[in-house]
Length: 462
Image (cartoon, rainbow, N blue to C red; front, side):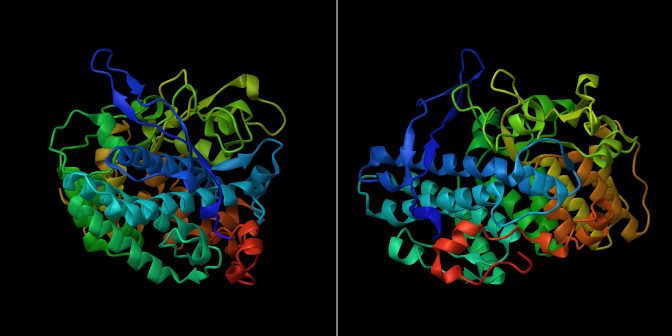
């Protein structure tokens, strides 16, 4: 059964900026929210349900990073949990907990979005501007969840209602149809999402809640994945030129700080709900328990001259050297007492990389509007040698490496290798256990067992 009907708890988070202390604060305080107990009967309920929508998104963030970075060559297994043994040794099964966690949280996001879309039109007294903007946020985040879902699992159930009788027996929908619905959701959201002025200084709100530029950034990624190079270039340029988000001067700030000036979409945590413990908590997995560590190959890549200061994504401690432990750890996800425990889902640097790839695919390699110029914006920030213009195939490989340097442990690597057709070549040399079936995650076994429409419909090879 698609578990949008399961009781799932969310910590409701609203992140604001204290004008007095210039520190992130929480208001209201985190509360338990059960999706089956969502209430939307009067105007005062709208904000609570809206925050519940973003809280659902937040639940998907950590397993999304795990999918993008743990499935491929960025990590090696170093612990005791079987879920991460499977990911590290490339022997993933349909019973894997991370596989299930991402599915559940994506569908939780879709459920809350559908709840808003069904119930909000029935609530009287809601200002029209609020009604439009919250509806747009629901459309945007439903599209976001379906986009991640279809590129992780392939054909997935298309859930468009909160009706239990329908959702308990719903088949897989083909990828093309899901992607068409994603674009429809993004397009509808773009109309009514709020506009943010160039030079806006409210960086926390700009990263926490969706606005028009957030949607355009997601659409740039959408068109890149669909190989519509012209649209990907156009939308990435719109985001870059908007002036709402700006590159940090020093890459280390990306590693050590939350809510940077280039963060387009980010999910936040606080002392009471910090992801420092738990089976899918990044700091716990990467630092506390060291279930997985940066792979030797990634360590060499990030410490190359070409990577520059992006080697600050990882750090070395000789005290960790024992057995197969190479002593390296990911620094990007700290604890609640540090200032880097959030998870960034999109940032401006990705837009430069999207535009570079889109331009390269169109043969636009040299000059101020060429792919290499975009690469060198990030190389300059990283204090790395400038890239030179070469043949198209060579520039595309440079971009692949740039994405690994720049976006390491932000959930992109596996999706990148699969969408570019490079997974088999890269991964077969990394692990003897790699199999082409791992270009999709399996449908969680619990879903196969509980949803009659999914019986016998598992992804090939699982």
